[in-house]
Length: 405
Image 1 (tube, rainbow, N blue to C red):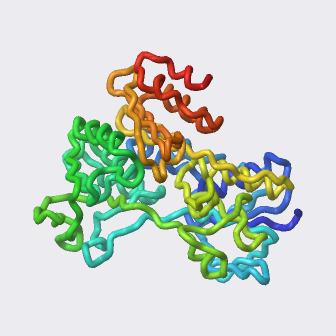
Image 2 (image 1 turned 90 degrees about the horizontal axis):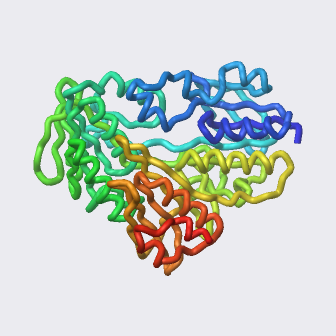
Image 3 (image 1 turned 135 degrees about the horizontal axis):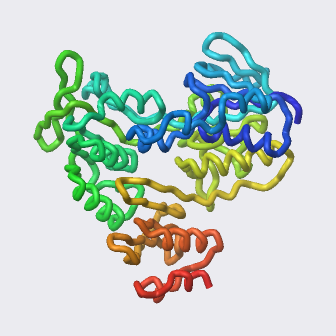
């Protein structure tokens, strides 16, 4: 193919697609369209080292600015696509500019869910955490002694709590479900992470939702909770999940579900259009899933690049994730969806452990808390289709390498 590739989205997936195509010596004309004013950058460090002031933004960019013209990649920033005309094979930006394509890649990512105005979501001092602008705004709020309310006990909320405590803030985290990490991890992993946060001074209130935020002069000052209590706050971080950015796809008639539906080659229902990263709903082990991770964004983008460059290998997702909180590294291999059994194994270091997930007797995932050996072993087993020897798992003194034999 020699016609123009237009990539809508300048995040991890969009950049990885462009970079891989150029690495494969694909010389087609290429345009990346991004809504932010800055060149493509890594997002995970934003909520950690960048917010802590330990990493300058220049260190987050994937490549220096000159990489794009040097590699024949046109970069259109501070703009967004308003419409896709599939019949004419062109996209129209919000300023009316039109760009024709032969191949289109949607790497539109996802958007954090926000609180409605009816419960105070429109007050100043209420934030979500997704991009550089969010991080820059939060930097002005993260001062020692201030009172932060975090709504949502998933990874975003817990990572925000870790950073805030490191900076000396008073942190209360509420979770309306029975426990933190209810959607994404087993009770044993949640128990371990809860204990870590409580040891660092975070107040965690589970089975507690938000009734409403109240403000003074248009800025949040207190939160009324579902248990009838009220707490004073200086600002709020909302971490209640994300929504895939699939409206463009829906409006132009592509198949969507919980994201943009793609096949094993990352193609949408239109063979000229691909979707990659957080916005894509891909086939995996007989199901359709979305994987919100850097690993999937890169791997799926590179698989799509190989297809565009003439290959025919389907994308075989091998999920893995991580979360850094305080001096704790939580590493996850596999996808625990539908698990019906867990097995907890103590690690060699004090406070380390791993949680092994099974569905109908089959090993499907592992969570490793400060236990790199369990993570690496479990990941290798999943990729090789090896079932763990339960006797070895049950013996804390046994070398996990035995599981790979």
